[in-house]
Amino acid sequence: MLSKHLTNVIQNLEKKKFREKYNLYKVEGDKLVQELLLSDMKIDSLIARPSWIESNQQHVKKCNTIEVNEIEMGRISNFKSLPEVIALAEIPVRTYNPDEIKDSLSVVLNGIQDPGNIGTILRVCDWFGIRNIFCDHDCANIFNPKSVQASMGAIFRVNVFYLDLVDFIPRFTNLDFPCYGTFLEGENIYRMHLQSKGFIVMGNEGNGITTGIEQLVNHKITIPSFAHSLYSTESLNVGVATGIILSEFKRIEYINR
Image (tube, rainbow, N blue to C red; front, side, top):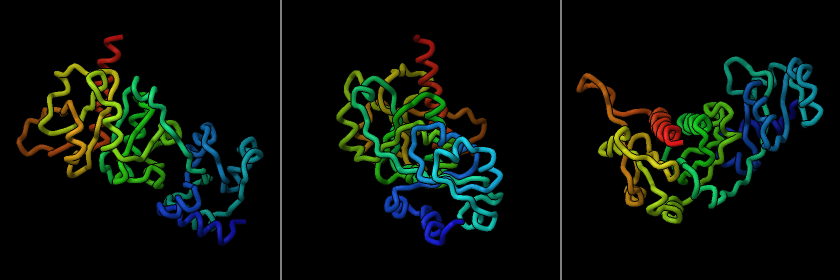
């Protein structure tokens, strides 16, 4: 049976301050929970309906598992169609490896405020083999339930760090380690020589990259529009733009192998 206290805890995990207080975040649905179980994330508990418990005895034996009925699941789930299982996972403490950063391509997020966009960017980075994402403190929290859901499991595989970008970026950038940034007036990405290492900065959904971060960018890039009308879409969703940009970087890397 789900206690009133634990019900309140899970409900409060919608808010960042309570995720930090309890050092927990919520993972909903069988698909995401199965990916969580395959990862190295620490699981505090599983809250599951009887049918899921019966079919997943190998996991139930290893984790603290609480059986709930439909009414109890309805109190803690965000889904319209109730999930079979919800997991509470511990928020990991991660440190980045400077040597790994110096020899790889990383994504830097400057003020991305939509949790869904953050989750989508994680998913895109996972697909293109980006191991590390660096965010400023104005970015949405990756453990927001919307971010977790939109990441489609990438949150368990891609490392995300929140830090002061103005202090962090100059530690690495030099002639051999570029900092690319996305701007409407940037150079056409399809005509550029792109390196296989460096930072790629993606800016806020409405305002783009801040002035302080712009000063640290040494290669301004843009995705050109091929629209036939002057009244076409003004800009791309930041998650979509990240996918296009990473695809081009990886295409060049693939050709140069």
